[in-house]
Length: 430
Image (cartoon, rainbow, N blue to C red; front, side, top):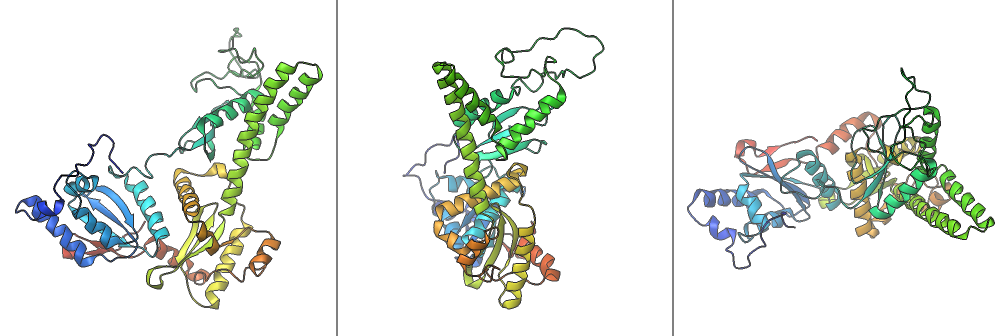
């Protein structure tokens, strides 16, 4: 991974170990950092942070072999990205994790919290799109690459930005929703005015019968908001009305022998159908990630994760014994009785977890064998062994102890630091 704008590594450049052998202050600093890593780091999964002289986080990383990964920085060439990070680092902290999945989860959360300048992953949005229903007085449908805490509803993540844009355009046209800039004034027909002056639509979409023109008093507020409700129902899989409208118009045009117009409507309906199908697949995939996931850990440090639509709702050490299994089953039963969170209500952090778990199970499909669905049908649960969930992994301690277990999950392990010995180990809470 290269820093944007950085020069390509020079294969003939000297290695940092040569610089560490010098008597300069930089050499002494590198020797101190390397000695701390050699003394304290273990070869097990974990995350690490590198700090600058002001105590700001420069970089967050993870590895399944923490000690080897950290020592590899000192063997890098002076032209590598690793050397560029280490040259600015005054302290290295690391935290052991029970598994690679735990390390990935912790790394993502630390990157999103600290926004280190040398990290790109988890800071910029990947190639996904979202359909945004804005929170304006006359809401619009917008395709965006990111989620913001702005009161809007977001549907996604979806792949193929151009295809998503075409589908959203057809949805807006079918329902007459505006696509003008957000600062365009809203003037509903039933909105009180002091002077009755003529107002004209700002574009031709109203003349083409593709917009209700709430900018020019061509519709009432209730009528427009009802159309927005139909759009949201379509995006949530509760209604196919916009698609049915296009298909009805297509059949009508064909019956009137207007074949070219019917073909145009057929293509528009197909673009809208592709958007609907993408959203259907997303809902099915996210529902499949409502699971209990037991992950074997280093040295027997197994953990149990309860995922709801790909986001972690419980993360505890895996207890042994019948009592722990019963308590986990009770937690899962309570979770199953709760209403599944809608896909359009997630915040950026919840979205980041969904992306991480989707990618994890996509790259490691064998890990799905360690999961047990918490919202499967009775028949599916019987196929797994016991309709009441007797095959669930070992669970957390009793409900009274659950808050402490959750707190321990938020403080997984001790920080080991290359700072002076007085602050060598510190528990850090999320």
